[in-house]
Length: 302
Image (cartoon, rainbow, N blue to C red; front, top):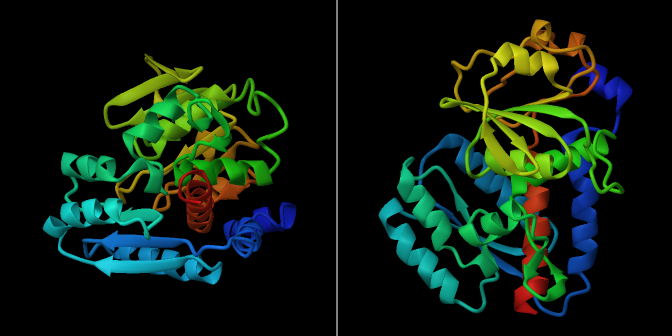
């Protein structure tokens, strides 16, 4: 964590914030009469995926969730997902992407039974998110829906920073946000969530910008420079070392900056323009996956 952030917000390290949620999860798991079992599938030699997989397994086991990490060939994955879907003793499924790096990954993500989808990336949960439907099963208001882990992790970090107020109906009403990433896994759900919560969101990817308001996208003509200078919050997640990093000269003083890419998407001088720069959210993503696992277990497997 950068020195200015540590000075102004000493408790705003992603690892420290994550531990607060993990401790709550650990205590709740201790009250359960049954043991939660999760299986994680890793079918690639992608180094970030391997690192994330090992860290996930370790953290899950520390809170009392049984976690099997299974390495396999990518063409074996489809059958393994179907087998895990049908196994009543498995309560959660985690897949470490990328695998094929094409639309087959989307197919595999949607193959997971929604009742075991701890990443909340399948179409069942995506449709609920885009409709702002907060319950897991229609008519059962005591069962809350699950939300994709990394977007949720980012919102929880903004909450810890005092930027997001969970006590208000529109936590970021009137805020302007720029997000560099529009994947169906992270960037687009995040834009939808923040626009549902009152923000005006500029969403950029290789196909150009979109404007999200009240969860609805619209075509817009706006440059990167205009969007950045207009924004109160800038969030980056471009997994490309050739992405032109956001520099201090492109943002307003005080802009909140968050990076969730494996590559740094901000220049080092960003700290001269903000006291809130969060360079990673990985530990929080793992914590939110645990949170989803517990919620799915209570919703569907108790």
